Length: 329
Image 1: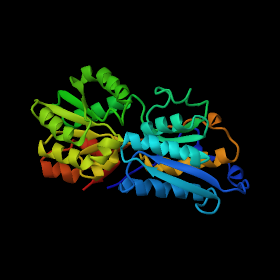
Image 2: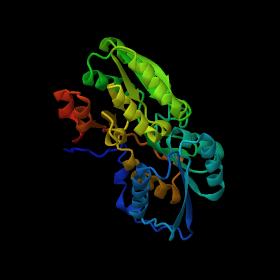
Image 3: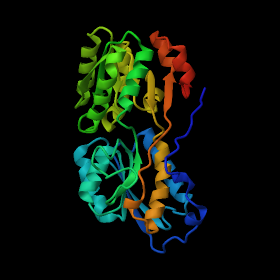
Image 4: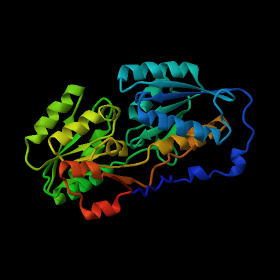
């Protein structure tokens, strides 16, 4: 059963006048650098790049004809990410940066080059841009979650497992330096729900097994897994450990549910890669990044893996099932 509403962005990015799209493209070949924090082998990576190329092609930009694209895949490695950003700064006319670590690396390596970011949490609060309406500088793009999402994840977990008292927020500090925004939101929302959140950082793969063992020793415990390059890369291990200890877990991205996770609440991030072509097109035709407002998702998707719930003996509340945008049998 699937009832997925694609994200609509404020500002009507997908509805730019057709006359603007029909403008004559520049004669010279433009060069785009794509700085990815995930690994090229990820299934998400293929979907991201397919949407990205399609978005560009719809506006007349075809790889090898009037645009060349340099791809870099850091696979969650911070050192590699910085090196990739430095390379792209010297090779390209514009950088597309994925995630907070990608944007930070691109900004440091290319302080004046146009940068279009994708999937970045609250870029204003993190200091990347001045405001959503007027970014300023050389950076614009497509934001991901706002701080209030922390409270939303907590509410979903409470519906999923009403007996939950202690809630661990799992994240990798190097890949998710923004985690504190979500944690503060969780702390504010916790008292009426009779829940107590706490931080659960994981730095290396071995930490995952260790922290799940610790959480499982607590009574009435649950976990919220934040989306970052590290947790996404190790999602199979995270999901298997959650299943091993029969812990209620809410994930911040639908890919976790598609990989066997229990419940996920997030946005359709791949769609932002398709939308990025609109901003790239406008920048190549003369618009400054400072004049392109930050686009924010306004619709979110709740994905429930009913097969996993049945296998683990969990019952999904009816109200949660009714609200689900996708139920995986």
